[in-house]
Image 1 (cartoon, rainbow, N blue to C red):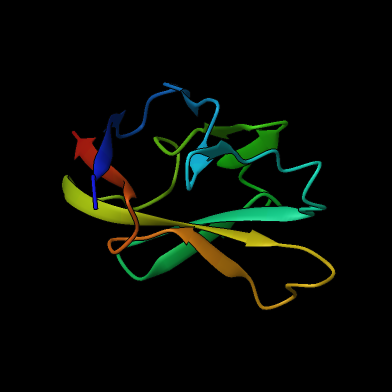
Image 2: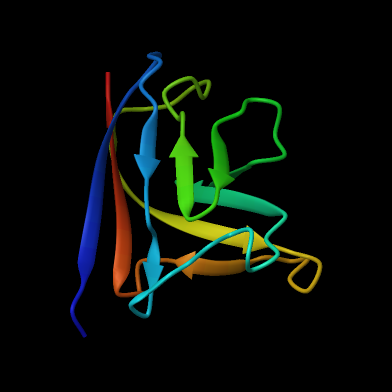
Length: 112
């Protein structure tokens, strides 16, 4: 299995939006709207933040995810593997689509 790693630097306390565009799963672009996705979450360091949260740390449109993680309170510097979880009417408990075991992986580097 070929592994693609997306590495994102996140500056703690800063407005530094990051975008993951044209997300592909199994070689096919994953369009959140076409898949009926109603909410997207990012999980790292044992915490999950979703597009329904007040902090507006993650949002999605089409085949893109927008991350604004620098404003999350009490972040600590370090490197973390992240999971992306999608929710829909058919997936109310969520389905991880990016994890430390999938071919597409997301690594976050939090910088003070």
